[in-house]
Length: 164
Image 1: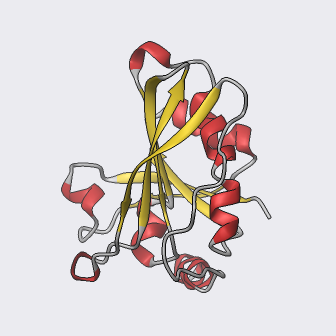
Image 2 (image 1 turned 180 degrees about the vertical axis):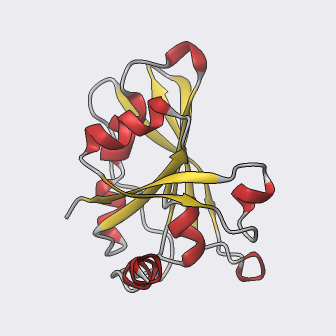
């Protein structure tokens, strides 16, 4: 089955985590990322280590972005990267630019790809993925065991962003 093969391939992707790394400078002129929290793995919940960061412009927080380190079946459906831009700051390209700023951090963990998922009705997030050059793998029905399903979402777009 194609889906099973995709998940196996994703889970076999290269990655290393021996601890949180010193944050590289993540600035593209106007936009910067600032660490909010480093979140340790929670194996009992099947959570991988993650970085939670603020998107900042001129000293103001304009949104957030999370980077989850690793490749698991849960991340195939939930994504390595999650982002949100505060309503007053939308439409300025901050989410896509923030994803690009994450590349050195992902590379520091040996990552060469990231899955980004979004709700099928989230046109703005879909455009972010398309502008990054991410490839739509599929629209997937969420398994009932996923948190997204338990939060009420039933299907997601699954984008594969290869940046190395």
